[in-house]
Image (cartoon, rainbow, N blue to C red; front, side, top):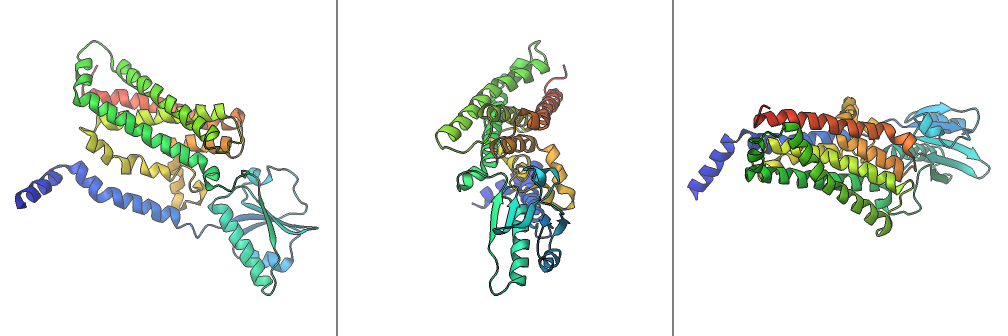
Length: 337
């Protein structure tokens, strides 16, 4: 038994990658969770109209206020002015309009309800709350569908492509192929397109099953949702190919998941990017899942079309091209031409 323990410890000691992932990957994820989930310092941005002056004073302590002279009629007012909520009074009483259900709207709602409760401790007025973007269903799956579908698709495509690439190398199929005159560009393109087709098929099945079997609400175009999922799937294939080049077996590929896949979940829309402190939200631009899930959010939740989501489509496509180039260069490990 002691000899087995000694051998295992010796193997871990000599495998710097496994040792690093064993010790530092959990610390990385925990640190990211600490910074991202500890967003209690976020100050909501609220526009107010025709609100009691004392209530405005109380609310000003916990929110960044914009005092309005007239009630906006533009449905896109909150989105255009980067505001979290519109708090106003009409003939029916206090009204609260927020963009969508997320941690920012929760912070705005808490600030307002606390201010109202402090001012009217005996019998606080009821606040009628509504959202610009909300589904007909109260199912949590509907409101977070773009995150769930994007992350699940990305994760399984990464595993599929990464494992397949590793098996190709383990069976020396890739090495034998590289002994032929075929170029590295052709090799990467062949593998990417081949596995990309399977990933695209998976994307189509996921969207159609979600929309027509599970009845998940999609406000915008189903076809456009499929296009976004396909681009995200090709990104996952490319990342799986890149990681597999540096992994000698399936176990080492799995060890990359906490570093390559898990951090991207934080930038999928699960938590609003601009609530992440210390500028860490800017890391989203290095995460391909950010472009895909943001586009899915605008289609599935907000009902946006191609004219509104093209920057994120362009970002996904650019990421695929960049990863393709990196994979070609990384293949120099096996052949320089």
